[in-house]
Image 1 (cartoon, rainbow, N blue to C red):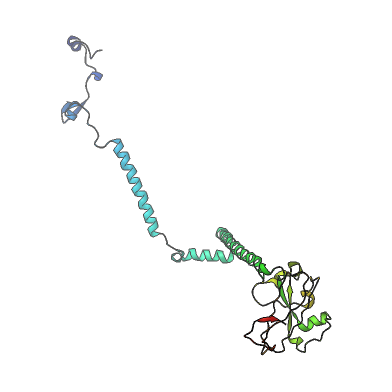
Image 2 (image 1 turned 90 degrees about the vertical axis):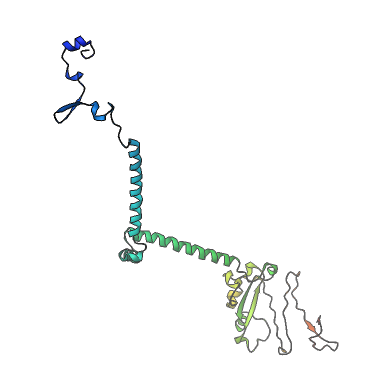
Length: 260
């Protein structure tokens, strides 16, 4: 090209602007660009692009965590530090309405349902284990009820004189099977509390057979009487009397019980 010929060609052809090296001016002097760096090469930047990127990432992280810390420091720690918030919550709970009131209704409903389920499960467990008598005597004892002495004699003619204290006394009815219990089976079979008192008609409504036993202890002050009921005996409906007697057949507490 024009800039790559011989010295003679360069002397003949004028030098174009694109063949001259870039220059700069210092005062009235024009200097070549190589004198700006002192070595003819371009000067490298002081901080590289990768370093700037790392500094930018770290500064962003520092700014983010500083903002979070500042927000936590100035935010209220409870509803007590925000009276308006607390009032809004209480109003929503009392009067309902709005998104907050709807959320509170859902939460309250769940808690009520859970409490009811707990109570119902406890009731069912108690009801299942509420038999007054254990299984070992279930072959003749499954429930117990009280009936007025006089009312029972008025309902059924037993053919024996009624006690003059009958209006103040109750009779006991022992049920030997689940099917013989009154309609409200849980009443007669309940485990705790007072023995239920029923009318003579209700107490015997499911009894196909009723065995009546009349007892009295004239010498209550001197004689300690017990009643032993033995179930499961084949067609056995009689009463035996056992007493502690000496050789003269007089009561003696130091003697063993014997059939009389």
